[in-house]
Every structure is written in structure tokens, then in C-alpha cells.
Image (cartoon, rainbow, N blue to C red; front, top):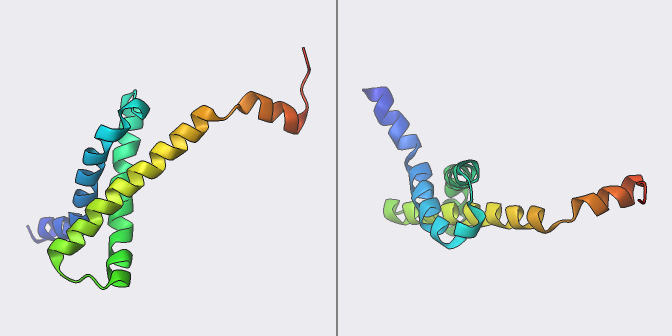
Length: 108
């Protein structure tokens, strides 16, 4: 039981980030066409919140637990926006012409 409490204490910021990712997913519905993209989207938000909340909250001087959870929520939405921008950049890139310009290609 103590292990479960310790695990929940460690994952509280990830949970706040996951909630932020779910809230931000409403605004990025056009990028989330399949389940894999949606899962990556949510996991990135939770991971950003879990790993960056302590650094950002100590940098900003936030010590109140509710405020730290709010920082985790915002970092979860930031992680989602980051992945949405990467997905849009990959879709907009003309990879075939870039490969041809770098490595030369047969101009048919």
C-alpha cells in the first residue's frame, strides 16, 4: 500500500499534464486523425508535465501545491502544442524534393 501511495505522489504532475493534454486536444482535432497520434499527443503532454514541473515551479518560486498542479496543467498543454506543431511541419514539408536536392535524383 505504501508503494501505491509513493507512486501516486510521483505521478500527480503527470496526471495534471494529462488533464491539460486532454483539454488542449479539443483545439487540435484536425491533427489527431488516428489513435496513435492521439496517444502520442497525450503521452507527450504528461511527460512534459512530469519532468518539467519541478524545474519550472522552482524557477518561478511557486510552492503552493495547487499552483504547482496548475503549472503541470499548463506544461501538459504546452507539450501538446509542441507535438501539434511538429506534426504540422512534417505534413507541410515536401520530403521528396528535399531528398532529391540532397542526394540527387533522377529527373523523370
